[in-house]
Each structure stands twice: as structure tokens, then as C-alpha cells.
Amino acid sequence: MAREKKVEHYDVVIIGAGASGMTAAIYCGRARLKTLILEKALVGGLATYTNEIENYPGFPNSPKGEDITDLMKEQAKKLGAIFKGTEVQSVDFTGEEKKVETFRNTFIAKSVILATGGRPRTTNAKNEENYLFDKGISFCATCDAAANTDKTVVVIGSGDAAIEEGMFLTRFAKKVIVSVMHDEGKMDCNEIAKEAALKNPKMEFVWNTVVDSFEGEGHLDTVVLKDLKKNELVPVKCDNCFEFIGYLPNTEIFKGIIDMTKNGYILTNEKMETNIDGVFACGDVREKWLKQVATAVGDGAIAGFAAEKFIAETEIFEDTVMKKDKNGVIYVYNAIEQAQRELLPMIEELNAKHGDEFHFTKIDVYKSDGIARKLGKTVYPYVAIVKNGKVAELIDTIEADKIMEAVK
Picture (cartoon, rainbow, N blue to C red):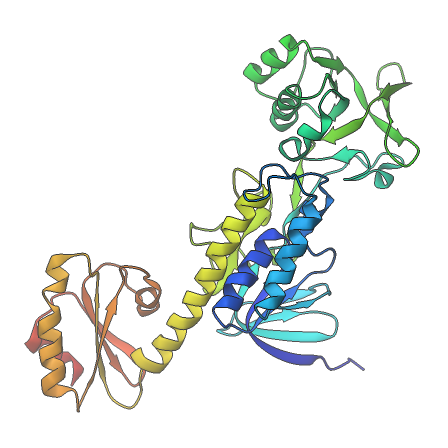
């Protein structure tokens, strides 16, 4: 017999408690929205594994990543966000109310923010799990390069990211040893990057190799490579290792529901809106150029603000714009356009004469076009005629007689 799930209602459900998700929660909490954050693993996301963060504004003393994300959690909770450590099993975004399912609960929300982040692709070599993140294996040169000043590091991979990040590491490390699985001189990166890397005196290449194992007492000190042609093991002493063999967004449960790139990254616009109204995405789960704590925070701020605007506009649309008690006239305009402002007195005059009989509403799209999009038209100005709680007609030629004829 199937177990009946407990149903809980929220204004916003945020899936993922990394930097972007928690920032979104801070914005939603400050807007007095009932906000839930679901996180199946570690609050703070990948940033918690970083030993030193030197490029996040306002923290000049190079704190650990978890020091920053712990403060984010504290701030989100202070503003009313509720954290639950559980894995999302499925979502249903087909209705106006969005459903998020876990093993024990069905969470129903007016809006959902997807902040599930991603994970670096790993080599799956022996002992790798013992050294991930803060024990010798890193995935972000921008994050950890300075901590490797005057050290020897190994880079795995030869794509654009691997070679460009390896070049960046040479500004700090005394030696960067790159494991390349191809024959000498062949790489997966672009030709300009390859030429620059081969000329870099701090870069050394070990051709025809893949990682066989990672070794070290407590902390990585040796990457054991396997020569694919000679079938021999090549131990490489190092202080740390950087893997740049790809990145996997955590979007499996959203496939077929949310529009994505072929690599599984969620597509959004600058407002963090996905293809589904009321569903937003932020942080590393998005298709974006730079994945850093600072950019995740920016995404989260926009997503949280956008979710609040969506909920507010939905309530206005349902309670004020689409009233069923009497027919309505909705003037949709852009306040920065003088010609559109000049039509306001006519609407106000109609309201003064016929306000008892019909409902008149003015919608300014200057800051947000959410309500206008719900009406089905984004070219302004126009008048929407509402009858029985539904849009009956959209009028582009805005004349008093024509409006009154349509609304009756």
C-alpha cells in the first residue's frame, strides 16, 4: 500500500542550497514570502570545499568557502527561510500551483527556483574519492590558484578549459604538469591555446596518459598516470591536482520539463525565467559563461526578486485585473512613452463616467511586463476587454467609443 505523503504549501520552493539558492532565499524571505529550501547533500554546495576564497567581495582575509556559505545560511534562516535536508524525486510544473515531490512530502508552491548546481566530471581512478576538494584534488583554478603558489600541480585534461586554467596556474605554481591522453603535440583545445601552452616554460606535458590512481597519506602527494602505449605506470609527485574534464549540471529530473542545452544546462533569460511561468533557475545549473560564488549570488538575487514579482503580479492579475463580478477595461501602456501616457486622461474619464458599471485598470509595463504577458500581448499600448474573468478582446486602436462598445 502506497504511503500517503504529507502536503505542505509555500510561496516559493527553492531546490538547492548553494550560494545562488541561499541568496534567492534571502531575497524571498525579505519579501515576507514563505520560503522552503530543499538540499539533498551539503548546504553551501561546491563552494564549501574551497580552502580559500580570495575573489568574493567583502571578504579580504581569504576565508574558507564554508565560512561564507555558513553566513549565507544564517542570514536566510534569520529572514524566515526553512531548510530541509531531503532529495527531490520529481516535479510537476504543469499547473498554476507547482508540485515538488520528495520521499515523504508533496510541496506545493506558487513559484519554484531551480538552484541545483552541478558537479565536476571526475576520472573514476583508484582512491580518487579520498582526495576530492580539500584533500588535494581541485576543479577550479580561479578559486585555488593562489593557494598553490610555488607548488607543483598536476592538471588532468587537454581541452580549452584544462589548458587555459593550466596557463592561469602557471602565474602561481612553480610547475604545472599536464596529463594528456593523446599523442605528443595533440590536444583537444584550440590551436592558439595549445601553442601558448607548449611555449610556457612552467608547463610540462605527459603524453598518452590517463590517471590510474591517486596516492598520499591524508593528502594527495602522487598522481599515478598510466602510459597507454607502453602500458606502464608513471608516478608524478605533486602538491595538488586539478581536474578539467568537464562539468555535469544536476538537471536529470528536469529533462523533458525545462528547456535545456544539449549538455543539460537550463536556459533562462536575464530575469532567470525558464520556459515555464513561475519557474526560475539560477547559479551553475544555468547555461552561463563564468561559474563563481559571485556570479551565483547575482543570479540568486535576480531569481528571488523575479519570483517575488511573479507572485505579486499573479495575485494582482487574478484579484484585480480578471474580476468576474463585472466586465473590465485594462489599459496596458509604457509610462516612459509620452504618446502612451497621453491616453491616460481618456481612460480616467471613462472610469469616472462608467466606473460603477465596468471595472477599469491601468497596467504600466515600464518595470515589469509580467501582467501584460499574462494577457497575451507585449506590444503596447493596447486595451484588453475582460468578460466573465477572461480576456474577450484586445484593442490596438484606442478610442473611447470603440472601448465602450467592446466592453458592453
